[in-house]
Amino acid sequence: MHVRIQIEISLILLQKPLNEVIEDTLRNSLYDLELQTGQSISAVNEHKRQWANLEVAPLYKNIQNEGIVV
Image (tube, rainbow, N blue to C red):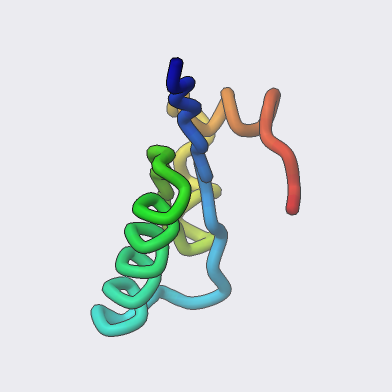
């Protein structure tokens, strides 16, 4: 029996916005990790200022309540 676990990296806060090349590199690295582990990984990349504007969003509230800083 194969057990599939979903890994979720909910948020990566950034000091400055990502350019397209860096964002593609991050996305490709996560995809490679998915292939190696057989697990699903999802990430949300947000600039710190943009994230602060989302205080009313359910995702923001969930991360504030359940998120783990790494």
